[in-house]
Length: 246
Ligand code: IPE
Ligand code: IPE
Ligand code: MG
Image 1 (cartoon, rainbow, N blue to C red):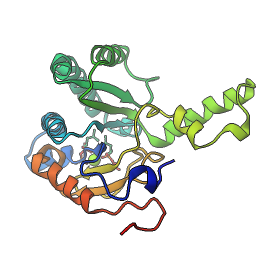
Image 2 (image 1 turned 120 degrees about the vertical axis):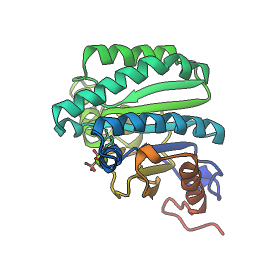
Image 3 (image 1 turned 135 degrees about the horizontal axis):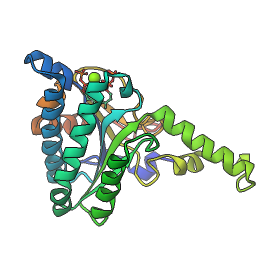
Image 4 (image 1 turned 180 degrees about the vertical axis):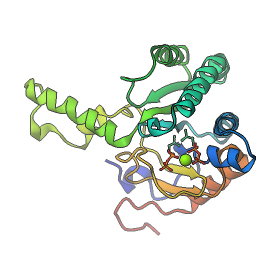
């Protein structure tokens, strides 16, 4: 469990784990009279800039929300465009990411993803497994409630198998079954586009995250915006339910 003692009295200068809800691609495209796919493409450039920024700042974990379990509700053509872009960028960027010490991982339900996308994801994970500079986790077909349902099923099955007792289910046991088991909780969650909600992102892990909402559309997100979000984070007093240490 996170406590003030664990984290020290002061907020670390740079958050260890930043998570981003990259929102506003569609509105960015619409404002320019372009198809929504053009917004998603421009959004991919913003991801590149952000990776560079995180490495320069010494952030060690970045998690980005690329496709939610609810995004299947979009028109099929847009879902196809998004999956196509994912295929394209993942294939194209792997060697580049590896060269910069980036370790790539994914969270979300893999069950209904196209087999070729699964292959690309697995290839990306093994190829970059040695990356020690920045761990980038892509949330793909991810929904926090879905993640908790899947974890609960696994725990229930283990109880039914006699491998676990109900009393042994504690916060640690649940955390270990979540897709994020190998990641620290996010210190800072940024959402672009001005919307102020989590939209089913990291509900369990966000319990004590600092939230920063930026009124910039994701394709316009640049280094100055990242710096501003970090500055805002540094002003926050993280108490974890305890009393502020002055
Ligand atoms: C975020 O931008 C990208 C994804 C959800 C895949 P949107 O596509 O949600 O853009 P807006 O919110 O419609 O502007
Ligand atoms: C959240 O954005 C999902 C991603 C950024 C991938 P949405 O655009 O899907 O969220 P809502 O619909 O505005 O809540
Ligand atoms: Mg949106």
